[in-house]
Structures are given as structure tokens and as C-alpha cells.
Amino acid sequence: MLKSLQIKNYVLIRDLDISFRPGFSVLTGQTGAGKSIILGAIDMLMGQRAEGRAIAEGEDKCSVEGHFDITGYGMRDLFDENGLDYDEADTIFRREVMRSGKSRAFINDTPVSLATLRSIGSHLIDIHSQHQNLLLGTESFQTGILDSIAGNEGLLAEYRDAYSRYRQCISTLEKLRQEYEESRREQDYLQFQSDEIDKAALTDGEQQELEEEQSMLSHAEDIRTALIEAMDSLSGDAAGATDSLRRALQAMRQAARNLPSAESLAERLESCLIEIRDIDSEASRLEDQASVNPERLEEVTERLDLIYSLERKHHCDTVGELIGYAGSLKDKLDRLESCQDETAELEKQSEALLKEVKRLAGQLSESRRKAARTAGASVVQMLVPLGIPNARFEIETAVKDSFDMSGADSVHFLFSANQGSQMQELSAIASGGELSRVMLAVKYLLAGTCDLPTIIFDEIDTGVSGAIAEKMALMMRGMCAEGRQVIAISHLPQIAAKSDTHYLVYKEEGEESTHTYITELDKEQRITETARMMSGATITDAAMDNARALIYN
Image 1 (cartoon, rainbow, N blue to C red):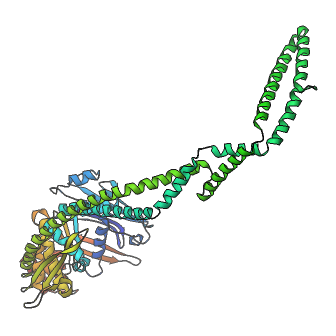
Image 2: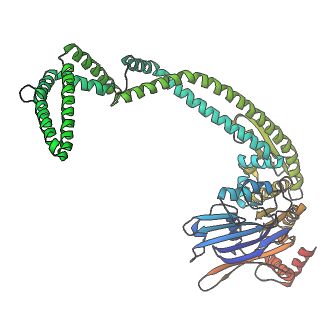
Image 3: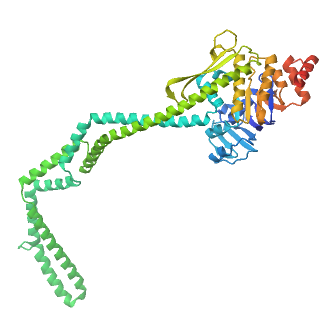
């Protein structure tokens, strides 16, 4: 149950701290006093969307904090799954919203995402707003109600998991088939390209070697002439460098006999002589290689032309890139061959998953049919004392030809308030007051199947009055069995009179600001407020007597 609520700087509320009691509580107050503001703060606490404009004028942030007692509801696993501390006697939710629109959420002082706040909050409080009366006419909402009555939470989760896996398998299969068709259309061209590159028998680094050889063969005569000239300068008979260095070395060694420090110079000259002789030998070898060979030049040029042609064709800059591209072509061709095997395997998987989806959908359908029969009769039994004696209500289920995330069923709430009239869609035929009573009956059924500590009704009494309102109040009190807490926001004295605890929401207007407050009423205050609800601003003695009778009878 909701033990207490602290609201700071939210719309017209500056600082509100209110404790709530077990059983049936009612919040009343004049129109515009701020009842909807308090409900909005609770919505924000439960993870609903909040904006910076909800912050009170002149403040940077607003906050809402709620303390809950969830003893006996077995929620430890839910908290453990989310890595949260568990204190069933005092579970604390807190939400802060900044002027910028950013927000923070905490459960037991641990930061959590809004999704986690909403998920766990949905196990603590069910808030019935007037908007739900409108949702009652939508098929998805009706299906959700039927599943809750049927206790299909586990089965529905299992179905949705299977359906999601089936849809993922089908999506993958469709992409694979598309890929196969696209690849199959270009298979011949891919094979031609691969064969063409394979036939060239390329090797990495080949292009650079061929380009160097082509340059050498193209300028063989010039190369030989230059090398011969160089060798003649190094070792020619007419004062070549080799002879000059040899004579210099002999002279330096002669000097070293009497001048030891000249020995190092002799060693350096000897090294130079050795290097010059080696250069001369290497130049001779190169001169032998640089022979004019038109046949080889033609072969090299043809090979390079082939390489250049393949590079241009496949938008590559090097032979290495061509070899890599050839590998990718082979991968595509191999992929094309494996596509058929993968497609066959995925088709088997999809068939198996579809079978599982159909099985689980069938179980959901059967469960819904059973729940629909009993729920329809139960709603009718509750509508009779609520002032619709000739009510007929049925939950119609039909199996569709297709599947979606909710299964394969079409669910419709059919209703008739008058004897002899044909049942039609609830949203098309029911008045506002009838919708309110049907919704209360449905919520009563849900309360018996869902372990919810707290249920909040926001003007569930719309469109009703008098004795019918009193019957609705007694029904809400009946929902408090097994420790459940019910809180109703109401404008009817008949409902307020049957509450265990009565809270008054009011606002005070100053010269520059207006603030909303809430207070728990004592016995006399409760009689006065009930009388005001009955007679308006002028409270007569008769109204006070009627209020006492309404509360204590």
C-alpha cells in the first residue's frame, strides 16, 4: 500500500507531505482545488512522462517521493532481478524533474531507468483515469483486460517470446532470399571476373618488379654505355681509380714504417680500395644483365598491360588489391552456394517456430474463451445492483487468420443496457455513466486476479449519483479485501461517506501565488465536507444531518 507521499514544487504544490491509511480512502475537493495535480504527481512517480513546465514557478526542479508497504506480495525476486535493495515494509520511489526536462528516478535510493520505474511501479499501483474509460472501447485494451482476468501473464510472455523469434527468423529468411536472388542474377558475371583474375596468376609485388625490368630493358644501351664508362674510370688502364688508390696505399704504408700514426690512414685507403673493386665488380655484373633483349621487353610490356587493364577494370591501384578483390569474388560465389543450404535451414526453423506460435496462441485462445464466459456473467451480476437491471455483457473472442504480439484473437466487449435491444460494441452504445459502472465491475474482477497493493480511481463515478453511487462505493470497499488499498478521487458525497479515510484537497490564494494542500479530515470535518458536497457553499443544518446519516448508517 501507499504509506505516504511527499511532493515538492510540483505545479501548485510547494511542499506537501501526506500519509495514507489502509482500506478505502477518498479524496474530495472543489473543482480546481488540485485533485488532478496530486494524481499527476503520482503518475510522475510511477514513471510517466513529465515536463519542465510541471515545476512550480521560480523553482529549478520538482520532486515526488512515495513510501510503500508491500509486505506479503512476494516481490523480492522482482527487486533482485533489477539489482535493488528489498525492504518490503518501506519501499521508496523517488522522481526528480529539472527545468531543462531532464529527470532522475530512484528506487530505494538506487538510480534506475524510467522503464524500470514503470515496470516495478506497475506491480504496486493501478491508476484508473478517466482516459481508461475511453480506452475501454479499444480492442487492445479489452484484450489486455481479458488476459489479466484469465491470469495469462506467464503464457502471454512465453507466446510473445516465441512470436518475436518467429518474426526475426522470417525477417532473416527474407533478407537471405533477397541476397540470393541478387547474387544469382550476377553469378555468371562474378564467375567471369573471378576466372579472369585467376587466369592472370598474379603475385603480390610482381608489378613493381616488372616495371623496374621494363625500365631497364627499355634503356639497356644507355645503361651499358654509362656502366662501361664508370668501370673504365674505376679500373681502366689509363690511370683508373683502382691503380691510383693502390699506389697511394703503398706510399702510405711506406710512411707508416717511420710514422705509426699514418697506419690508420693506410687502413682507410685499403677499405676504399676494397669498396672500389667491389663496385667495379657489381657494375660489370649489371652491364652483363643490361643486354638489349626485344623479346623479353615485349613479354614484360604485355604482362604489365594485362595488369594495368585489370586494375582499371576493377578500380584497384595495386596487384595486392586485385588479389584481395579476387578473394571477395570467391567469397560471394561461395556465399551463393551456401545461401541455399542456409535458406533451407531457416525455413525449417521458421516452420518449427510457427508451430510453437500456433500452439501457444491456441492455449491463449482457449484461456481467453474460458475467462470470457465467466467474466461476462460476473460483470452482469455486478451491473444489476449498480442500476442496470437489464444489463447484458459478453466478451466475444474470435480467432483471426493472422498473428500479432497479442496472439491470434479478436476481442470485443459487447453490451446492452435495455431489455430487447441488440448487444453492440461497448464504446458505441454505452453512456458515460454506464461506461463508469462497467469499468468498475471490470476492475473489481481484476482486483481478484491481480496482486496489486493499491488501486486508485480517478472519478470512476462519472455520470452516476444517488443510490448507484453508494453501491459503487460499497463495491470499492469490497475491493479492499486481503489488505488491498483503494483510493478514490470523487465528487459524490455518497462515495465519500463510505470511505474509511477522507482527505480534503484545497487551495489557498495569496496576493502573488496559489498553493494546493491536502489534509486528512477528522469526524466533524468529514461531516462538514460531506454536507458541503451535498448542499454547496451554504451548509444548512439539514445538510449536516443528512451527512451524518449518510456516513454512519
